[in-house]
Length: 618
Image 1 (cartoon, rainbow, N blue to C red):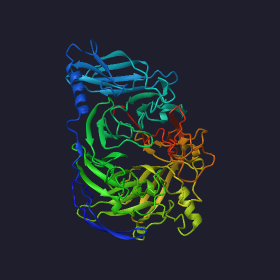
Image 2: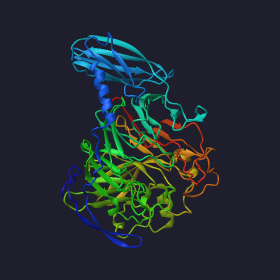
Image 3: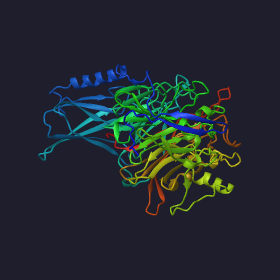
Image 4: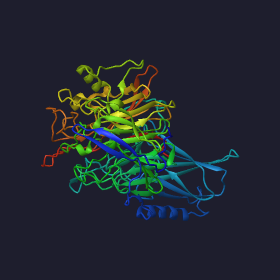
């Protein structure tokens, strides 16, 4: 067996026979790059050039007269994209000196300081300052130290910031605001901050901007949506992030195209823009073991370009520097596209979106690509090998209606002792497995550490859509729940164990019929659980993304809604139980009427794909 290699173009010619529900077809499958003449890094991008010119200009304005003590040049929001970040420009003559910049919040209960140690260059420097608060006269403290002596100086500067953009509850010129700043409501915060790391909760709300909140829930960083899209984001090292999407939102029922990837930092400076030929509108991550490449879920055609074309069922590997596709893995050639999806996103039969591949990552240790197929309610591992057959490794999800050729890849649920948990021939056991074991419409599939070859550990947010294929056993939103869940897979035995879960305790209010993620804090192991699509009707009853799908809840008003994305931080105790440390709900501030008079009852008001906890400056 040859070793997994995602990092170069390889020919993975193989023949797969897929048994559809009605016919049997043979497909030729090559895990190799597509011809994408419209794709690549935009080397002449106007925003990238303008931001570079701004940076170079600010740096060029600094002379030996601009020391921290005399005439430092303080510039708030230099790129017009990050209203709570600034540069302090100064001249440095001694490389043995270091500088610690800090900003302390004005919170009257527990002021929180965000700080960073900066090692300067000789000559002109732009010291990054973030963690400012909106609509506040902020105090910036810079401590200068000499590593060779007890010498130190402290410099204090004051910087007034503007308020954040208005919320949807506010009116401008007699009209309600649309896609305004979220209203952040802390529902619970453990007073012992030592249980949580000192970083910020970094999050993004579609069409409403990125935000960083401290442990009090106070906004300490923001990124506007007018240049860098607020759809999703991920870290790529060296203080940089990537987002894909568009800054133009047509309306709530027709999301903008997502053919652009932006690389940026907390100052809101854009370093590169990659134009994609096809949409890549879910998670974009670094390739495991290779920071020069990105892995993302990809379309194979233009959005809804013909009902006969499947979409959102491929994984693409691209070169970060050029945007060139290195490899492409087409899951429609590996799985059964005729297995009916349960989640019908308001598009009738919607068989072209049979998979809705919403997250993927590669595991270099296990030599796998692991992908989440939301509309199939499964996550799948494939083994792409150099010059060999690209094969399915496992399918984790309900055993409902799989073709005979694919049944061999289905995992068997077992307990910690290896005992089989459910009888696949027993109707009651099938329903029990559906309700308590398997995931439904899952998002944010995330690797957990495992150094043992053949043992895969994975966590995700289980949205919970309906929790059954049987219409008579499906759950309405108020009786459902979202949850964090983690599994261990033993590939040698083809078994799967559910190791942990949390979220059912919160009930229907934590149910999210779309989006969400989980994140393990590397500092302390705490889990962040993001029910990013939670929503209620005008009476506060939990409801679905689309009131026209799933079981009918007669108590739900189909004509009113407000999104209420919730994220929580939990800490695991020695006995395996969890303690909630923090809970935050974001709202738009206004109940809306989704029905447009043409039968459209989608309830998209505000959604949150992603929450992580990190040092603001990393």
